[in-house]
Image (tube, rainbow, N blue to C red; front, side, top):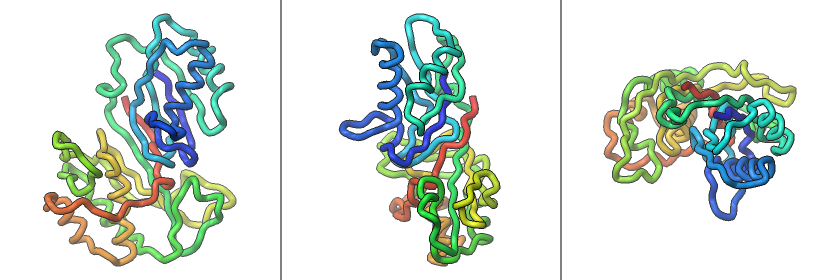
Length: 250
């Protein structure tokens, strides 16, 4: 199992897709270069959308012979582009499954309000020039905690999609985690923890909270979106660049 980090701003997400640059494609290309062959397979722990970053993601590497984990990590980090970094390599046995053994995922969404941000902020947090009602957004975030039917927060689900998901933590707090001299004086992060998420679910959750902050919808609207899931999918999709996969639990 390899844990790794990446800045997603110039990638079309994790999963390999034709004719676009993805993180998986770059990782596989680098592994082929390091191994001098392509006789391996990888399985990612989590998919991410275009422009979404990861403080901690992971993938399982299947090879036919044991590897020196220290040497592999060094060789990969030497060859990978600067926006992808391997943080650890550990041997796992054949019974390990990176999908089934995942216990939970933590996502963060960084944002600010009240001013236009420095352009250097663009890969990390989303800025709203208008003022947002942060206390009301904090109340709205708490409504997502618990087990709910998230059908309205699923983008193009299949007929077999399970919409019932448990949110262990949902909160908006001050961002004291990431700082830079070009960041706004005040910024926030939306933290969400759960076993697994639907496609675009967190960005749709954040989109509704932005609507709450701008006064376009109220807290009753948020409650209704969870209690009456058979209506249309929500349309307010928060920009991808503020989102990151922050931590995986195995």
